[in-house]
Length: 137
Image (tube, rainbow, N blue to C red; front, top):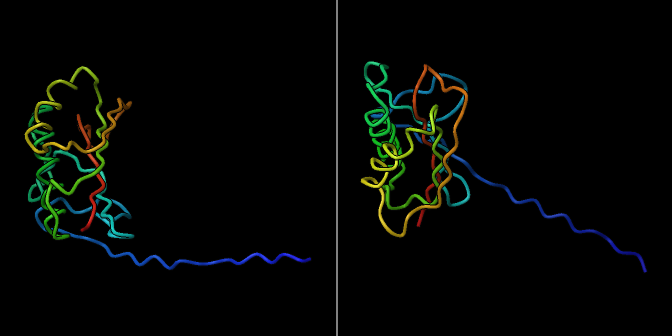
């Protein structure tokens, strides 16, 4: 008896999300992409969307990065409570307690899943970069 393999292709529709209240991408990427019931927000620096300048200090950069994420999520019709996964990149793991304190003001229980990693460097000499995934209802 000969077996045949059935291949099913699932077409995933995707759309770019853009907010004028967050910095424009500095390369060939979108601020966020909606696909498969999720919104994938690109890494956000603590950069002012109007001036392009980084905020001073790691706490201020973390706040600005999270404000940028909130603006992008709003453009997708979502809020911070819809975030299910966060990744934080730090140029110095010694800054973890300061960033964690800021982070706790933007999220609540049930907390999103999260990873935090130290990196050798970030774009523009930033101290922190934050990316996330949010779920559409």
